[in-house]
Image (cartoon, rainbow, N blue to C red; front, side, top):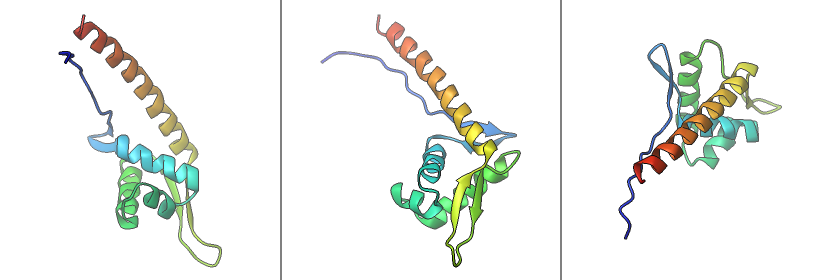
Length: 113
């Protein structure tokens, strides 16, 4: 058995002291992007629709402008989509995460030299 040391992380983005994005919230945003529906995204993630709704409200409140645009159901049905700002923020999160992953790969290599 090897004695490998490994540093790990979870990336969270805050705005003005409020939690904006993290791993779970980004997964929910990706689900909304994929399905066009908050209900379908919550089912994919095995979380309640009410919990997903409250996460989206928290994200929108922490952001400088709406991230998710929600449409209530009706004759044509409801839906949800990311705003242009939401799309950009999600792409920025992924770019930051890619750089952090690169840093941690290098750090872990150095820890085990």
